[in-house]
View (tube, rainbow, N blue to C red):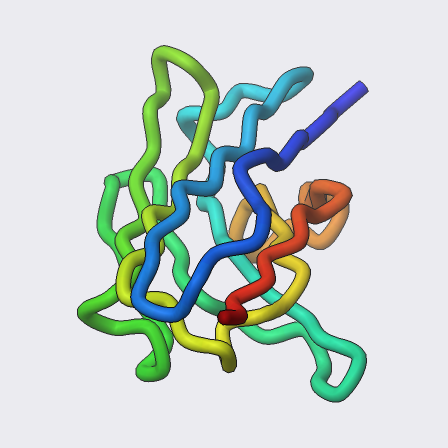
Length: 118
């Protein structure tokens, strides 16, 4: 059974940092592309950052230069380092593991909440 478990969320002041982790099990981690998404009650789920199985990252314009996605295939874990956090980064953050073009191989974590507030 595939499981993705996020951790590292919390309350942080504007300008602060958090490092999210997503630990995977039950899949061949190194062949999957990985993504971090976020969702609020007011917005649909949106892509924040993704990294493919060749370790090539991509970012949404809203987080470029502030967030860094990385993966550790020895630990089956994907990370999202978030710096210079802003109130508009407040959301529930989800990780996704997927194989391009294979709808049955898309797995979501349960989410971790990030609140940026003074």
